[in-house]
Image 1 (spheres, rainbow, N blue to C red):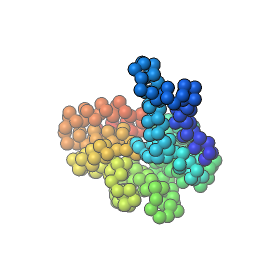
Image 2 (tube, one colour; image 1 turned 135 degrees about the horizontal axis):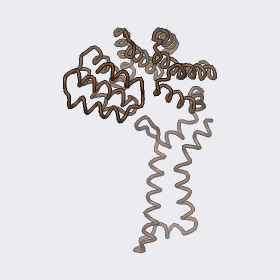
Image 3 (cartoon, rainbow, N blue to C red; image 1 turned 180 degrees about the horizontal axis):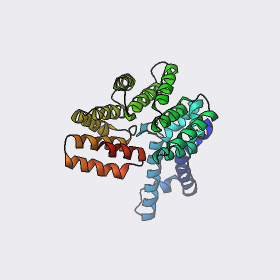
Image 4 (cartoon, one colour; image 1 turned 135 degrees about the vertical axis):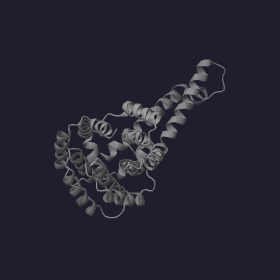
Length: 278
């Protein structure tokens, strides 16, 4: 799996460079890269330069908007953990899980998450899916206990612990009777791991809005929106921004955020949340 992953990342720039190599092999370097007025040769040289720049850029190791470049994918593939490989093997099931949650079919989502957990027991990322499904299904106490167990075994500050703390805060945010102390402590510890992360700012801002601190919460959500790198859910932020705008009686902002939310959202549960609070 690690080798296959590296080869998949290499396939794109590799194919481009192969085309360029064939062109040079057939026509020669001087023909491809030649100072000529002929339109065909100018077009060929332009294509060659585009391939060189494009493939070269893609082979640089960097991350952007939650995604990785081909170069970073190639470099990191040999170091993939067993848990990451298991997640890749569950790609289609995870897509179905997201579809079920978006459709509001929470019981089926819980069942599917448990089935995935049985296939790869001990995978902490799959366990998070089960906990989020339990929370969405209204089984808040079960979700709370499960996330506490996972946090106890998560150990030192890490990306896993940060995600578990975010999940713990999200459970309280979605609960009918939230424990704001648990939510605030979870966000505080998570921010110590990942300072000013947009997804954490979004949850903290939403919690302020839910406590009717509309202006403070709206400002924090705005910061999260502007700095979002793909980690935070756009629809979630737009929903709470519209609630905040309604709270401060800004009708223009409310209509703007509501329309943007409608164009972005795919979650029935989030739609219900917005309707219940506005």
